[in-house]
Length: 107
Image 1 (tube, rainbow, N blue to C red):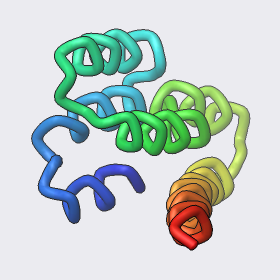
Image 2 (tube, one colour):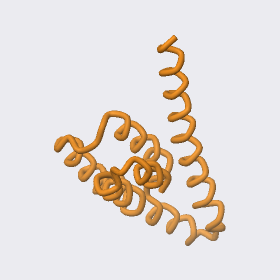
Image 3 (cartoon, rainbow, N blue to C red):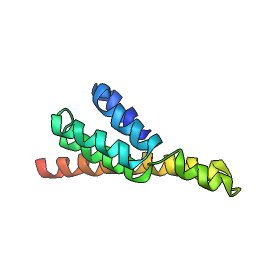
């Protein structure tokens, strides 16, 4: 999960791994409920929530959905790898845009 790597760098792993893992592997219904509970506790910053939403939006349900397509004969590589790459790229691009916006505002 791309968001887990980012939050580990920010020493916030104990708060964001659970919603990210659950949303990624178990789907949006259960993971979303955990995410809402964590957000209400206030343990995640606004930026962390935004990055988590971007990651989950592109990389959710890594078990159920591919299992359906695998049963129809699709290659697993094309079901998992592009989603992971897209999620990593989306979160990193979002971070870069926020960084450059902050740089431009300071001037």
